[in-house]
Length: 496
Image 1 (cartoon, rainbow, N blue to C red):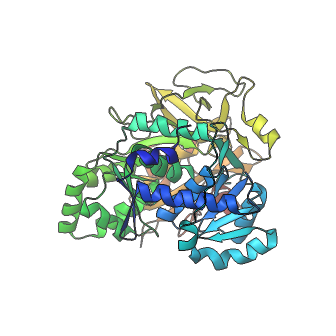
Image 2: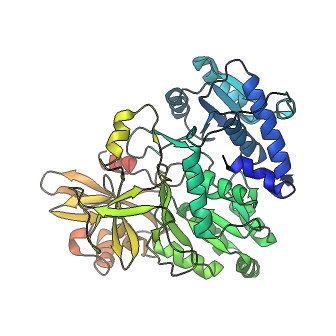
Image 3: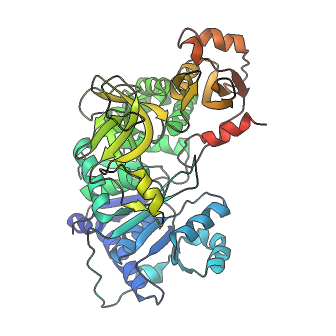
């Protein structure tokens, strides 16, 4: 079976990873992951099951990931920043038998492993140089390879199981669509317990023999240093990160801005995803960098499914067209395919779609139609060949007075006000209307706003029935690790 870890041997002397001012070749990556795989197989409690790993982004992270796969285990990446209760939930739900960790997380994990009787492997020289004569197992494409947990913004996180074949399909689709090659150099600042960082950045780069520069923890000034030194030519991030980078750029002196903008000319690709990209951020980033951000659409369950083209028209506010080997259709509430320019739920089919929810057969069955289409729960419209997201059916589509209203459309209109830094719009249960529209607004520093001012502005942008009826002003919005606003928490704000 061809895989990201087997292909590493094709690029033996290429630089695979740069982190903490140290470079590592593909040969070093292959050798150390072989050693750790042998060590895993030599442990008496190793079984082909969930192996958790909580490792600092960089060389050792990829070593741990590859070693688990080479040994025949199922990789369960653990968040480096989450409440203890969330960590314990994932460990227990996935049936993790072993956790591999960086030394900095050892103390944090001691109590957890004793509670669940889990073996803890702390990465170090003796383990990464472990040798024996045992042959590593042959890995089948149909084997379960990874369990990633959904963000849990609307319900308890579910473990999404993908096989090696499905991971390979996700990688291959993006390499074909986005033109990856061994000459590429990407900066990774994304969390590595989500599909965006794992597949789109790490696996795509290493499949093609490209190099990854890791930067952890997140720091705007350090990111701009990397941009300025010209060491990378691809960047991928979530909208929240682009917003922070725009703000940081605007705080720089003009000569520094000019130097950085010149360096952006050497980039070949900049991508945004994991949440809706505000058009205002898209436009500001274009002015700063000269690049039209490539916006795409994906989920933990399907990898990436829809993307604006690498070569072609990238439309702000749209997620694009189906990626290679991905089938897409929109359906109404009865499951009937709908025509262009009418909203419907996105259904996905193809080799990139996940296998199952871990130990949740009923949830798995409910996630698919009878003929095998995955129901995303996202509502979109197809306009002139491009898909546009209107929101999650469960939380971004507000049903008020007989209308189906997109919260994302209202949010984008609010964000165009110069006083507004960010906002979130939700439906609030109402006996008369079904739901009324509520907005939580984060204002720019030293700004004040009255409702009539907001109303007058919005009536130039949206219809009267889309106006928020309830407004709260807050200092920030609740977000998960990928920067997505947690709208279940937003709804709670209106119940206080």
